[in-house]
Length: 403
Ligand SMILES: Cc1ncc(COP(=O)(O)O)c(C=O)c1O
Image (cartoon, protein in one colour):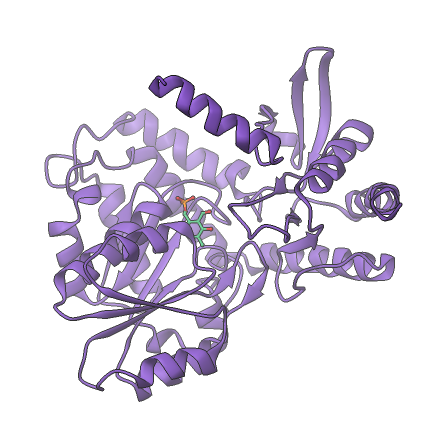
């Protein structure tokens, strides 16, 4: 059998299992967010997006657009090289300083994506430190799993957010053996927060290093918006914080902030960092503008959390099961890939509401869901329209499933 037909057959299996990923091609409009145009065969239609990680609408904010345009006009687009070969612009240097200072860490490092930040940093630490044991939450993002899995380190997976299980695993190793605990502050598919204080206390007790992915919390939580560790007052106890600009900051790219020696090691040894062209300067200028704007405008995050509160309240009143209502991410549990696709299809076709279904392997089979992410741009009217639509579709689809 040819390579092509083997792959075709594999994709066909995915399609039959209801897990094939369809893309909705969106024509976003700066002045109309959260509404966008979708150009289909029967013409264009306006749809309201409820599944974007552009939580604060900063991707289309004038402060961010102006900074991007100014930078592109001033320095052009690509940097022309990897960071060590003419690929470090003044924006890269400024933003790294800004991030290190915001997280009160010795140094920071930028990456083209949040995925690379996790993968490159974790694999560098795990490959470089002899005898290290990595403890990883079972729901960690693929980028952390890849960083740890393909390294030489011994790995231990603790049950999601289960502090007792983590302690049981930590106890099995001598106190002086190097250990790393890798976890997220906000799990984006479940919308729940990690027990940060408890994990930090365990790290102290068992002499472990802490690596925290704040990518979905950064920009939204904490007095200056750096994330959930700041909100809980434990930022100083996190050794390395990872974050990114592709979510609340409305841009693209990832970062780490932590000890200078570790940042130095990653920028010296991680192949994905060393042998790759750095992010275009205007993208970094946009991230810098967005980071600064957000810090100075807490009202933006307050508006988002108000809207989230209204939606939570409405979903609860309708009896619609939400996986967790801890945060600004509200995943509705459907539990079947075909049903989640059907709800999503009806919402967009009948109500112009776009929610992407989340199926395996992104989430475990049987826990398929619709991940609802309100944004600061959604109005009360948008929330009411969403609730009316989900009420109808949910009741039809769940009644059919029960028959
Ligand atoms: C928890 C987590 N970490 C890292 C990433 C990767 O970030 P990026 O999309 O910037 O590559 C994601 C992306 O969805 C994520 O959810």
